[in-house]
Image (cartoon, rainbow, N blue to C red):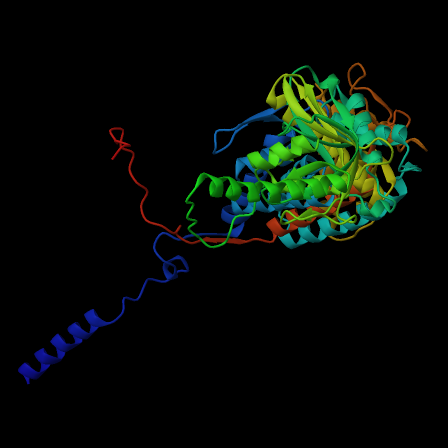
Length: 563
């Protein structure tokens, strides 16, 4: 009996060792080793809120016309000096999952409107900061989310009553420049009037008969180093930083043929061997190739074609005959440049060297080479009728200045596209935000539930945007906000906003000063920021798996790169 008992004990021990290891209780023990798990208000919600607040704080000082620049060096060691939030965020490569949601909201704002990304980030960060206080007071995240959604719906409804101006004519350069100036001033304050005129002129010159078909890609920007920003100009047509291939340098009233292939003799698809036994045979062999190329070029000349554009190389023999028949040869290295040129001259790009039909031939009033600074350019200019493509030549003393000017111009073009969709305008310089905050405070008092605190906090979030605007201009935010509230209490003073050009904390009628924001910019910014914030507040657990991949290689200072 003792022997049987001992055998049973040994068998039980062996079976327990062979059985699968049962982990201790707890959710973290169910996951693979290295996984992280956070839950509850302290670990998940407040952690997410703090990450987003830190991100919003980075671009808060860049908000408005007096915003400071950030110096960002990306992973390729390229330097960016800008106050454009979209550029800063794209180069920062944010990794925190909650902060990424806020970045996604700014990306959607950039796609929808093309401007106002910093507003979304600053406003979203302010809402989360207000939510932090409400949650610590004892409100449940669901109450805050419900209140924020009610406040956003009410704000978007009230936004329509704040419209102070409607654009009358999409082809009036002066009126468009007046509206675009606000968007441009946030990037280039000193040059706002000049750049707004350039953008308005370029946009109106490429406006199609149906304005809804307007594309921002039709306004191109060519940056040429040298001189200053005030030397920038608009060309109705396309400007390319290239040189012509042949001897012809200027053509008027030119027919244009465009090819995407090499402009040269066509080679055979299969390899072959030619036995040449005498000098006469050698002459006749190369003569046949010459005759073929000359015949192709002669056919182009007989059609009246004066410019040949190719996406590949131009052969020496082809170039000789193009010069002989006084045809300009232009070589473009980018397929995108070929497409833009086709759009500009209304030509069809041909995949091989054949004689084009009349429908495939483009037309350009002037094709010439020019010199801007010390850079040679080819200009395809349309003088008689509106071009399908317009080019803004940007000048500047450094690459960073030209890059920032290009961003300001892109914001202006996107504002014009927004105006085509909706011509309504709201007062800028914080007037809209303060009026909405005032109306939301009144609305919050009519709500009986706990959501009234969140509605009031939503108004405070809008107020903090105005506070950032004032502080960046060197004024006391509280003083400016109190003056604006006092001004908005009076009847018919909804358009009173912050005066960044006045002495101290001064306010003025911004609609009379032609400081406007587009209706769609504010509409989408409030909507996207609220959606992003509510999504972040709904998260109560963070579960992170162990990152894939093996251990990182150790740094070895004695590493020999040749081995």
